[in-house]
Image 1 (cartoon, each protein chain N blue to C red):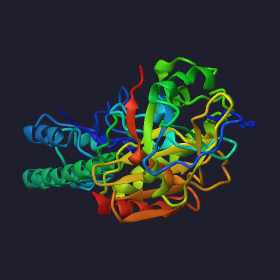
Image 2 (tube, rainbow over the protein chains, first blue to last red):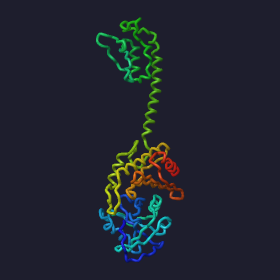
Image 3 (spheres, chains in turn orange, green):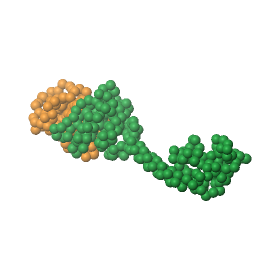
Image 4 (cartoon, rainbow over the protein chains, first blue to last red):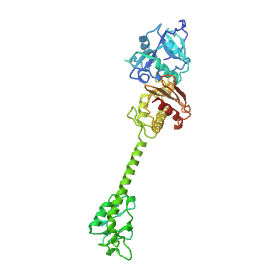
Length: 135
Length: 251
């Protein structure tokens, strides 16, 4: 869910441990019918980080609506869901670094850097909770 | 009645009729008799495996000293007739034993092609499962930039490799008496394929890269502190044995 990095006038802030990161995931391929996220829902964008949105500047609905902008080939928000990751849980994975990376059009944008190997993807899926189901 | 001879190409007796005007041919003899003993004999051997048949010399075989034309009603080994009863019993016993062995062989052979119970109705035979491959091809986009975010497509080669890997796990699991359930096949990063097992007591993820020269990697844990992690040197089954052992411990 990468928006190409551009110079932003938004200040970069430190995200506290009690911060929550929302991530847009696809209904097909990223979610089990139970709503449990799959490891395939978590990977880095070509520019290196996994895109999320910080709950200080966005709520889960904002994240879901952004599907129409981010996924040009399938912009229907009904095909997407939103999962939440607590910053403290992500940081507990050690190899992952949370960095606020605001975009001109999206102050909440936050990247989770670090290699997304199998272990990390399994654990990210485990700590993720579904906040908005598809549809 | 007609005493029949087993055809060399068949496993059972086959009644053969002599050419017109001849009762017997040198290599294809037929003896006819009206007696009940021969009738019983004939009936006893019909349909039996050739290996279970008694040697022919026990019966009336034509010879120069006793022309077949004269044996039409009298076997020159007349004493053999009296041995037919015990012989039939012996043959029947052999037939029963052979039938039991054949049934056991058929059961074992069927077992070789049978997989452990899986969560999907698709059972894997040797090699790849066509249905599964076709389903994954339909589900996973093959064209590049399918998401508008620059992601590569999922190649048929990667899909077949992932399914082949699963088939190998199934075979190894069956051999080791470990139930290997059908994983979730998902879209991994950069055109790779994820094979994900999520059981109550364990979780296992194998990632098959899009690059055929790159090794599949795996990670599994018991949702606690016991984990397994690494790369598969090749798709060779021997490299999967550790995974099977690990799965056995989780089951």
